[in-house]
Image (cartoon, rainbow, N blue to C red):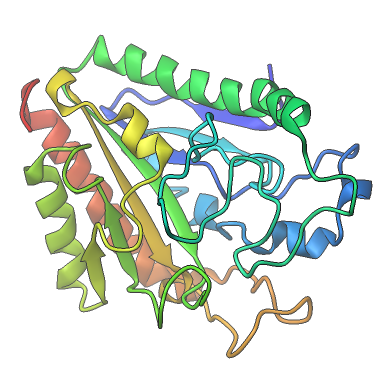
Length: 277
């Protein structure tokens, strides 16, 4: 019923959520922005294309066209920070990852506007996730929710230095079984690319909210540094060099790695009884 929300149902016990690849800004909000380019710069560029094989594996995929600048589907709807004491962006961001203001003076979203966006966009996205978890849980004792993300490799406001390519988040082991997290980490490490678990990115609200291993729902977040699948420009991103176009040849090795990761998620879900933590 929402043309911005895309749910492709599969029968396998795996859901792939892509909450940040969207770049659509509703027409009524465009005049309120300082810059349309800034509003789209922090998108998880091309993640939807990077994982477009997931449906062929039988996975259910859920993604939104709406930009995270409008509302962030991976934040606590109460407005509470997921990373207290660390720089982050909010449910309806007022600044970019680099601390550039997003909205013109007088147009920063107030409580009423945030609530409107939550009802219009956030709630339907999460209703879709809940509906698909419930549907698949009726058919499978174990379901994996895999939350797919990416970010520029260097964002000084958010983290020091260069981010590892694979950043696995399970909120310190709370959102999925050790066996699943270990299998994913081993596959990522075997690629020879820098890998970490529960480092700067421990999993956002989607992972933390839905992960319930004791109930058979295992949630895991994958945050990729973008250099793993595209050629990031040296230095600051500008309207002239960002975003980089998607190149299937450059992305091909990463797609192979990620297919292995999703296969491991399916293997885990297919062989694990309810209650394994």
